[in-house]
Image (cartoon, rainbow, N blue to C red; front, side, top):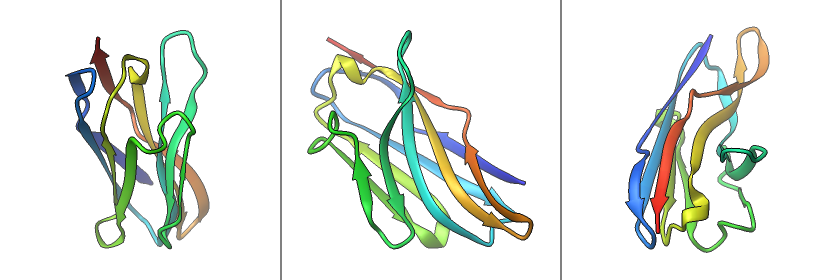
Length: 119
């Protein structure tokens, strides 16, 4: 099995910064993509940012220019640097990964970390 463990959430004032990290462990042959999605109360989950093993990145329009995703392939770890945070960024942030294991390919998700931005 594959486990994703995220950390780095918390409470911050608007305009502040937070850095999330997420590490994947388990029977991993290779990782294709890692990323973050978020879900605010009463809203649908949305993709925030994603990075491929080759370093290609995608961002939601709402976070472009403010968030930066990066990865460390050797550590199976992905980071999300969040700057200029806004109250509307408040949500539970979930790490996810598309992983190749000895048994095939699968999508995995961590348990989520709360990010709260106060105005």
